Length: 381
Image (tube, rainbow, N blue to C red; front, side, top):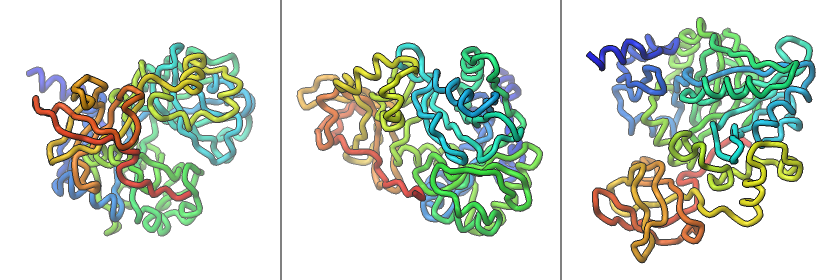
């Protein structure tokens, strides 16, 4: 009975019917019923995305916009909460950043985009995409810290599709001629198969690809138009996780959380020089100290010997058998061809080439710290 009640309370994305019609296995995820895999299976979906174009429903993510009297006001309002340079964000650009608490821990990681022109025609505007599991808390946090004149507007009427893989550009070229002209982390409004959308060249698989924001009422039409191509197949959460793990991309709630700083997580590259010098964001003292002296621990990649994957929470031991860290994400890397893991280890053990042992099913399995990603990124620069 409890399972039935839980199923009834799960939210659905506008594409739930398309997933069910395609034979997807649906599972609870961040309060939504989401497809974990389709009949082809996770390994086939993973490989198809690497070789062709995988289509993901990420409509459970939170979309919102910040609006204000001018672009500087909006940018500075959000800069008070994140360490990215948003004042220097050019029209049509997007940046990855983190929502920080006062201790420098990560409340969430998010994408922030400046549209080529504000949708209202006047004033300033930023588009944000936050994680599904934290979006309600994110919205409250952001709205509660905005100055007068700047407001957060939820966009619950929008769905989000991600088309990822080397053939994504070829597919969109036939449906949206402007799309191939975008470089990585650029975006603009355009018509896709005759459907109004906002398209960014981005994604979370390490592959070239696009994320397409579209009205809920047109999401199924867009899904049908994209899957009409023989190059496109739907892909579920299972392959999405293995793809992002091979790409060395952190997952919120696992590899990053409220105790983790951007420096520990290997995300210091997302903090621009101006922000490092000027500060003005939460946790600046801790982050500045870690950047100057180095953090006590670091997120690393670990190549695991054998075939058994190391799962989240597995102990990481040094050569003397001392506990030096924990696995935060782990699994089999289909493209890599073996088990891979990410986790945090003390700084002395974080150098690539360091030999470690991982405790898997009460056995010590050898592993080696390696530079991330496990599979090279193929973004269109």
